Length: 316
Image (cartoon, rainbow, N blue to C red; front, side, top):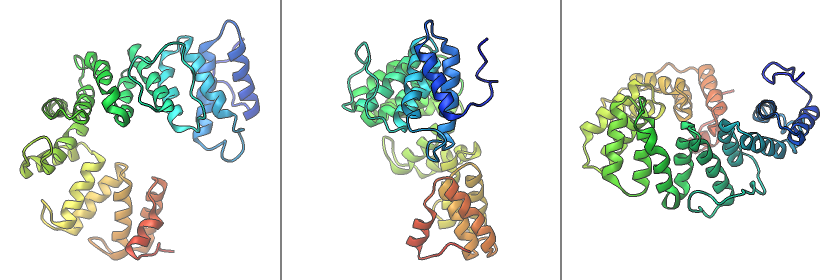
């Protein structure tokens, strides 16, 4: 009897990899079970099991081969995590494909392999695959942007969140097609897409692709912030802190920085820590400063490097 990988007990690292290898060699291939094993390996890699030696470094290669085998055997949603891991993991040689890429080469083998995965997912109706193709393709948009638009086009007809139109706007912008970019961002924003609202803020604030309009920029910024967009919340906080576009008020700025920090903006989190160190808009509180700075570091922010630039030290 084959155990359901979602409920199977967690196996030691070597046994897990051996089971994945055994499944890849099986005929017929149990693709669902192989996918489950790979997702367990993936989760262990993410939590750092290779880094601390619980999983051998061969886990990377087994994971990629396992995901590829499961995807080719019909587990089409697996193309998405395979594409992500090709970009994230130390890959010496990406998979060899039995057929040409369906888009112009980017000139980067690993990037092309990841894009191929996202295109495969999109071709099987996976919306995330199309969005990731557009996002990752930004590194080679002049070569693959047109293909990204072909993947996004059928998704725009049923796009309640505006995400397909937002990504269409991003691709058109990178292709230098301002009118189409702004039009799609407006459509996405009216559908409630906060990312598109923030893009419209940036475009109106800088005068890029549209006439510079501070009032419109502020309106789109606040609309995005109302939806807890992390960068929008940070920009509102910075506006109150500096007096640019908002009345200067450090206490109000601190409240917006806290909202941005809670929404996942690491720079806002670090800024709030410094405000507690200096007593800017909040009471001086080294203990709370340390908490916010530690949290910023956990979010990936280089706290010590930033404090060094500011001529400050982390509170003990």
